[in-house]
Amino acid sequence: MTSVAPVAAAPGGPTTKGGAAGRPSVAAWLVAVPFLAFVGTFLVYPTVLVLVGAFQDSNGAFTLDNLTTLFKGVYFDAFVRSIELSALTALIGAVFGALLTWAIAVGNPDGMLRRTVVAASGVLAQFGGVPLAFAFLATVGFEGLVTKFLRDNVGIDLFAGSAWLFELPGLTLVYTFFQIPLMVIVFLPALDGLRPQWREANASLGGTSWTYWRHVGGPILTPPFLGALLLLFANAFSAYATAAALVSQGSPIVPLQIRGFLTGEVVLGQENLGKALGLGMVIVVSIAMGVNVLLQRRVAKWVR
Image (cartoon, rainbow, N blue to C red; front, side, top):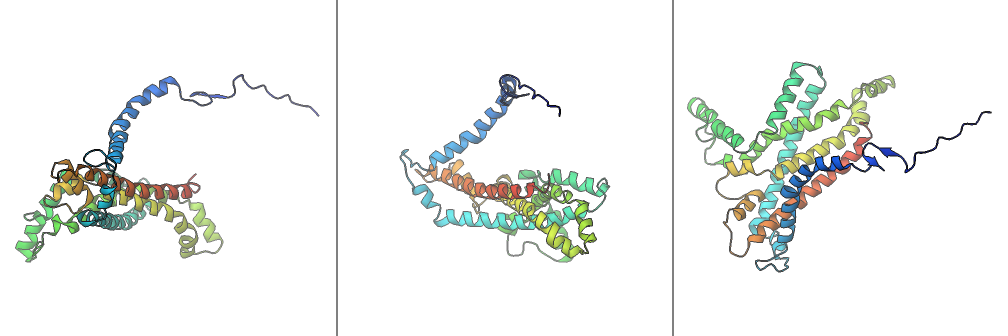
């Protein structure tokens, strides 16, 4: 029996392209500096300011009054309305977006329908702010194209007794416009990850379409669907520009409440209350994204 001598390891242990023990090289750090500086300036530093200011009074002393105020009056109502708006638009966007995603996933992967929907979703998911608000005002506003047509030709007044477009129902409609395309982008990889072999194995064992979706497809798609739902919730909860452009009077949701503090329309000595509102938003979004990470870990083994 022939023995084989072990190959001697190189001095210093294994190395990688990044340097000894897998450490990034100096060049890699230099390339990352602009990105790290950007993140630190526009994400980390503002977050620290919000975190510190939320626990300070007008004199800089430690206090919990800012946080306790969030559970009272208009501020608590704003959080409730923001959560309701985000949950409703996320659910609508997830359901209709999933149906649209399924329609293009079962079709020709190189077909015109799929390419058109994916391209349009990539554009519409980022279409927000003032342009989106103007588009809805020009379409279903007081003097919008659809509003005038229905009023002059059908006798239907979309704003009979209510300016719904500039309230929570209007925000729900407008937010849904970019929630559905975002769901298509996020959920399509999960549907594409369903392998044909799984359906074939189900059929070879005498299973039906119901058993396939009940025991295979459904359990696999549930975590990514819930993860996408949470992502849509966080997306709507943190949206500001569209609501700010559409709602000029009042502050029905938290981002608009914070706008009031940033523009100086605050009670003297309560400037840090706006930072407490921001901290509350950070906590809500962090919880949603934390659950999303757990769901993604659970489904990762199916897409390897």
